[in-house]
Length: 237
Image (cartoon, rainbow, N blue to C red; front, side, top):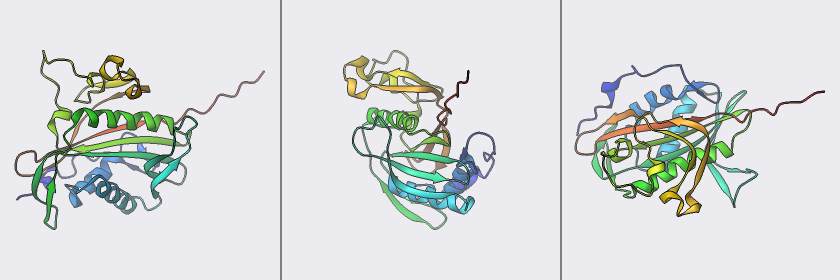
């Protein structure tokens, strides 16, 4: 099968927007990553590949996988997928790799992939929004956050048809041009454990990741950055 990722070139590389650990823009990392790894076998595969590319582009950044967090409101043990430590700032990253069935070869050195369908799209949305909420809780004055989702499931980026029946995850929809903010209720509030509260406001803007042959061969990514925790104001008389 033909790998068409190279057709995208580097036209989307820009230095605008938030930086990872104060050193490199996400678009630059994505541009390099898609050249080497247009498809991943698993979420762990994505995490490892992202960390490797980040080191190649910005050797000053130290990367640490599965870092335990000590948020004041933590319930049990919580771990961060990837912590990127730069000379003066840090970035906390949470990854999601949600796939539907696709089989083919991809990469500069052709590699076979057999992706399975994860199925539950509503739980994929819940998981991504939960990542944003976690990154807000993990925030520090010297640390921004990044929630990154890569998927070939078009239902995640496609707006539901008008007239569709409301679903339990309607507040958690992440299709193009949505804005995630405030109190998000699962099933209208019938399942409080899945309620998520977001301090920030996050527009969803999907970007092409790679194009592969065959049905479900289009991969897109959604990236949401969270801000550092504001430094407490000092009050003087």
